[in-house]
Length: 162
Image (cartoon, rainbow, N blue to C red):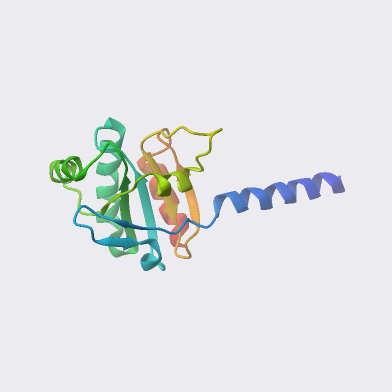
């Protein structure tokens, strides 16, 4: 019984460590070459959504994040990250068409790779992907394309705001 209790405690600690891993730092430009540094948002909940502008599920996430931003205002910052084959032209068309007001940042793949834990054994990227980062800079939720529902997003934000 004692071993079971210890095993459960260790499992609980391990799961907590996974949920709250430190968010990798970055500084990325938008289409006007203005730099955005994650460290500038310490003290706020940050939603990092990784998308491609031609992805239908990404459009749904963009709409959900617009609603989230309206609900939470300045308590939450949304940063969208895109990579190739997107370009300033596709990004501008996307932001205009879907009314995106948050920064859309250009990545060559290194930041996305760091967040998604890409390796030769795990080379796949699926869009969209959302990371919820708490006020201290820890990843609280890692939502893949099957999990980016409004219920999951709001639940993760509420947890990160505590």
